[in-house]
Amino acid sequence: MAAPRQCSLTRPVCVEGSDPTLRRAAVGLLAAAYETTVLGNQGPNWPLDPLAEPMLWRLSTGPLTFDHTLEPTLGFDRGRPTCAGGEITRDTALACAAASSLLRVAPGTAPALRAGWAGYVAHVHDGGVSAREAARRSLEAPEQGLLSDPTLPATVPLLQLLERKASPGRGPSAPWLALLLPAERTPLGSPRPSSEPDFFDVLKSTLGAGDPDLARLLGEVAALRFDEAHRLLAGPALAWEIDGASLPRNLVLPRPLAPTGSAYVVVRLDAATARAGLALRTFCETGSSYVWSMARLDGSDRIQSRVEVPSRETSPSAEGVLRELDGTPTALIIGTSLGGGPDAELDPDELPLPVHSCEVVLDRLPAP
Image (cartoon, rainbow, N blue to C red; front, side):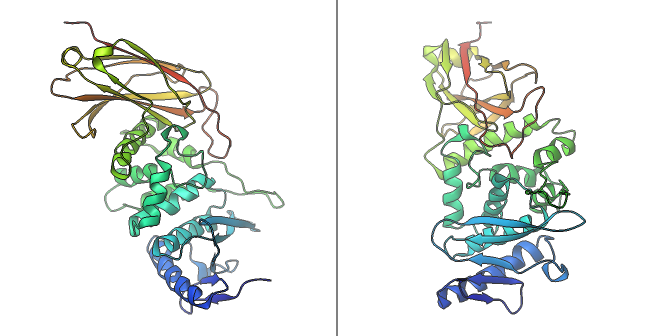
């Protein structure tokens, strides 16, 4: 038997739940979230869509989840979204409204990306306890990347970076537009919506001259996640932390990298290493491509500057150097698996994602 339903008199939103007091509170929150995420962000216009039912939130125990059914249409795909669970708070309502608006017009969006969009909107417009906790959980295992757990908003740093890189005035609408660009047309009768082209196909096609490839963008995301982990946690989970005096070192990453997953190696510099500089060489398993960078950290382990390591897409290895380290207490090595490879593309829908191991070789540069 279906739970009682209560709907807003002014916005196309409804809430199902057995407790009338909770229903009333949730309807008000969801109506306000609809105004913010849909009316304020060029979202789908529910009242003008003859196939659309009201945005629906089913109150239940457990974390917030998103589901949808594919609507029959002769044009671009449309979905009938539903949210279930979660605490009755403003940031939960924002996440529900954000995911619903995305699944309404892009039902083929990968689960990790819809969770990321929901978390991003909740963080931008509320930044409440639930949004911060979700972000913290997504940073606890950086090697798992942005896509491995479809229940976590791990793609939030990627969407935040797109916002920062947007043209003046675009702001938070830039990630929304990037998620909508992969237009989908699923043949009638198909059991699941089409998911090609996907979000990463769009990024590879639209990155401008300042970002020649997806590798550079994901390298920036890995650096953002490092600093974000210092804000939300005691710090990121490091692959290795070593003293410069112990160089040279051959370091096998203790945990393999999933596509978009990152590893962080910290080097506490002694005077001799700081004067000479660092030399890096990496050796990784084939089956993926990789992006590496070397950074200078301040006394609080925050990134001050970063140097990209040259690499070739056809090679799983890379070599780089980091000089001018006088006065720098710590250096950081960041490695990120890009998935795919020379003959394959990163696909956010193919779960479980394959993982690959890497070895990092570090030494001092020869004295000048």
